[in-house]
Image 1: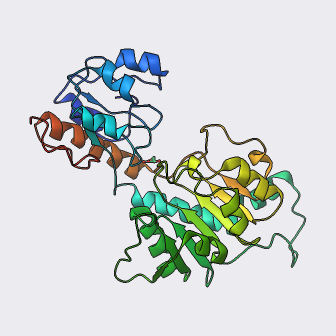
Image 2 (image 1 turned 90 degrees about the vertical axis):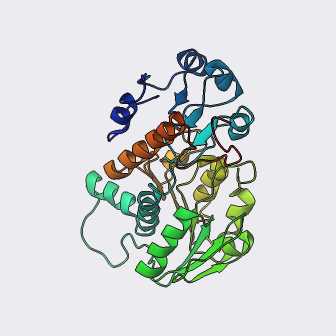
Image 3 (image 1 turned 120 degrees about the horizontal axis):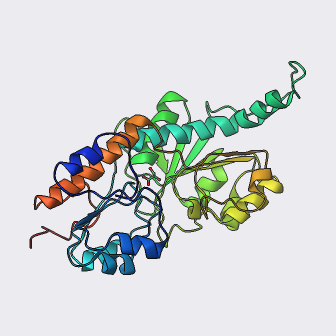
Length: 319
Ligand code: DGY
């Protein structure tokens, strides 16, 4: 287990196994040394679970239970080839992440962090009709890039709660749940028509730089880009350029291409709202993620597949 997590996960695991908590993110070589001989791993999204790590863990490794829904830090194919289950934490973080996407949409639209800086710096000198005008959500168009669990949860909030018109693009196709009004469209169309574009795709070779300089050029000069998925989905230097040139109006980012670093110049863009990867950061959700990650391991130790797993082609750990 790389780091302690909120909730009872560690306790549950200790009832059934010897648990080693590394206590910090190790460099790849030290991580490989630390996990030698493990039956199960509970890594964080900053741990790289690749061939060398699996090799170092040794033949006893049965399950990698990632403390995240995203699996871009895990070589799932390599795990599958070795008969190792890959668990992760879908569903339990959907609402928290969708809430944070809405937070970024609202903050960028109403210039909340800019305004906060005005107050703290003492620049606010009294109410004025043209002072710090922003944009309204009601009646505006929200384009969702990715329409899985989190994209759909954002659609519910934005459509039913804020009266936004919702467009959606998903490389895997869009299936609209009952009760929601969502129009599926091509990415280009979505970028051209949306007042807000919010990214909710997993990071894969296909989605890396899905929002590149060309995509940013298609957006309206009044549009706002939000990303709570994975940093490399957006070409960050291209985004900095778009913000500097004001070819888009603002951005709300929770994730970065080379986290925890930001692209040069991003911190100086006043219309960017910048958060440190907080999508799932509530006590309730982080505890639920821990419980699910622990259950994924306990199931496998008991000879069953994990509760939530990414390589269903493996049928049973004992086969
Ligand atoms: C995830 O789970 O993939 C998030 O980025 C962290 O909660």
